[in-house]
Length: 102
Image (cartoon, rainbow, N blue to C red; front, top):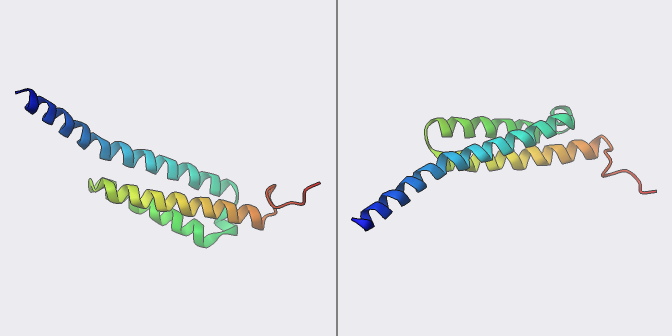
């Protein structure tokens, strides 16, 4: 009986991991996308900006179908592209990271 209780507890914990992990990754990607938007990536890095937005939309879709691992994978890609978009936009705009050092 004790083994059955442990098995049920572990199974319950594992089923809760998918939604939590996917939600955390999607929120992280949304923060990265907002940072890219603030840097002007929609105009200065359109390829990376578009990719980030398409990947976050796909991540939300997959989570809606309860395919949490696919949602995590797409959210991670969205974060990566959003970060690249932000960095590219900052370098194109002559942000603080690319200016001459006094």
